[in-house]
Image (cartoon, rainbow over all chains, first blue to last red; front, side, top):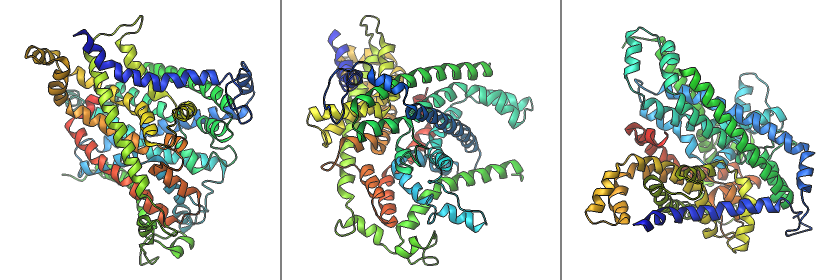
Length: 288
Length: 282
């Protein structure tokens, strides 16, 4: 009987450990080497890559840019997703149709939809500028201007991932008990009061999960940037992942890129842990 | 029902967001029927009225000759990798999740909750961090640019999701059911396969659905770990994007690539209405 215990867990665990843990340890080792085009293989150069990283402004700027992008898109997704979930929560015509429709973007392949968004944002031939011109507004340089390109990436991210927030928050709303709402109605509370006194506090735990999951996913933003702007113009939309990709798999500075990715991973884990703790404190305290 | 400005605003907001959701699809659909003049003379929307529709974009998907492209093989490769990796992840993941839900594991300071956290924490790992070691690892195993190589990598991506979803589902099935099955003469393995699995079908559907979504939609690993012999659909379409492919072919192939998973949205809504998903997200 004892043997069964390991029969269940070990196959999966061993596969995952061998696929993940080995590469991770290997990355740390490679980050201490000068592996690049001229030196294809492991050697030992100590902390040189990390010293270079400290003075590499492009890396730290990409990290700061990623933070702004992640916080901006996730908060927008949360507010919009919550609003949408409330809209189709109950007593509305065709609510099942709209629920399906609101879910569709998260099912579509991000890079492929970004290919389409690229044609939409096209400055001379795209529909967005065409519509703007028709109502006598000037064309907008959606991709070629730094600030606008940043906003374009955010629009695509919001389109793609608001449905995920919507899904989790709607699942949460549908599982709420009815009694507190009846009590609020009997007390004569209006919809806004009911929301802040009953709905929002009850949704705090699932809100925390949803925000944390989305922050984790947003910290990896890469696909959209790669297809829509290639990090450009200049480095205006370059995120950490994209910069590491350039250094590692385009310039083939494997050693340096490994140092960058290990640092990035550590910073992400620390930041996300702090964010998770803060969210739990803010949202749960407010709801009690 | 009395006229209510609040309700009117609700419908207006719903319709506004719906048009934002639909816009890229509508644009891609109309673009896929255009030919040169419909694209190069500025944005056009309505066939016959604004441009003469043609089936060129769609026909080029079928014949790979000439200016056309072949999406048939990438489509098949994508399907094999997604379904293969999802199936293997489901088997490995449900076994591990069941073990973690029913038995107590200890190794030094490591407890069940730590092992569960190890599985789930894999979602934090940015693809770029793994891409370089994966590249070197697959090269050493001579699995670069092959379907088995990609399946191996995708298992690492998908199995954590299965464990995350399934541990909770198994926890909701009372232990007495396992014990009864074992008293009836089943081995623990038989009890799991014949009795417990059928009771957690909704969970398996949810987990499988997530596997298929994340597998089918992944781009980065397919992009860095395959080149010519194996090509997945997202990589094939992004390759079109960077060349001089006309918009109608690009649009038609994009729509074809995202269509299979749009069907999944219907499944998700059904699970949502039945309350299955609420259990999965605790």
